[in-house]
Length: 328
Image (cartoon, rainbow, N blue to C red; front, side, top):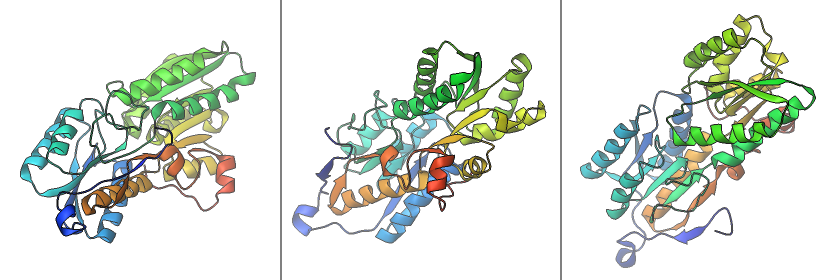
């Protein structure tokens, strides 16, 4: 589409005869996992808008298990108790079939964080009938993160970089990893010495970084897609006798811990996903669809957040009141 956001009129079945549908019923939020701060913050955004619009909400824990989440959506549809659904997908490609089933039954359904379908960089609907996509295309953000490392490494030869990704089993993390590697490979002075998996948690990140430092004690930068990873990385660096402030540390998510660390000079940047805002915007469109009101079908979270998405010390200086939308 020609613009980032496209507006269409979504009408419910009863709207033609009875006017706008009533604002009532329960919205299901299918969390990738309910056991981390990011998904909880997204749900908080869903809850706040839902309550304001007259809806109840429930959260279902996907446990970072794509097959489980697919079954949860099917079971929820069969139960017939939800008037709308919002999904934070574990497998943004594989879950398309579940979306198709929901759409076929006329239940509004949206996705947050990632588009549904094989093209993770397109916010245009790849599943016909999807109500809303509130997401951050992975490649532009990952490119911006990698370019920030390139800038840091400009006067270092060699510049040794560790990449700490979420998990290679996730399509979106593979795309981010490929983007990181592609950008860094263009610069002969930059050497990616290791790739670790942090599984969106400090503890696995601590272990992975500890192992990496044992084999590669000379590290100049850590490039990651999650602030939870840097929380563990920082502990590993300190345990190895290194000062985190001497390295370039880039995370993802703009958690409160990252905002504080950047302001204190311990970390350098984070790519924001604005989970609470994202959940709220998605819920607004689901409610609009239920009520037969105009729907914004595609929302680019790189542009829809309260401040610019690539956050560093300069951005925070210009936005002194921003503290992050979630706790890691």
